[in-house]
Length: 90
Image 1: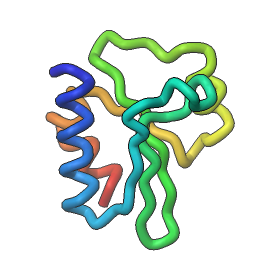
Image 2: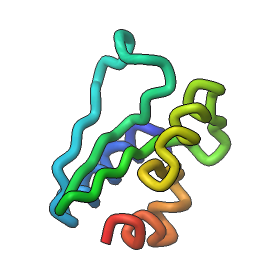
Image 3: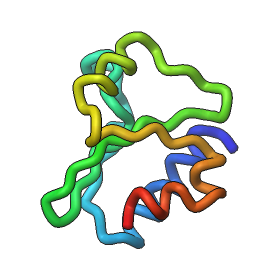
């Protein structure tokens, strides 16, 4: 599954669970490492970084992960297929 397809599938799940979300389709002017999706529901905010199964976090992405801690999640295709994404978003 490509990251583009993963993006579409995760957005479907976000809609299903009633999240407001944003994905910048052109991130060239964003600060390096900013997560792919910002999502919120009922006062909960979560930032999602989408990666292929073998994709690695850049140092900038690792800094965002460390800064956001409990509000940050890495999502891979296997997480979508295993139900881990659904568990995260419930």
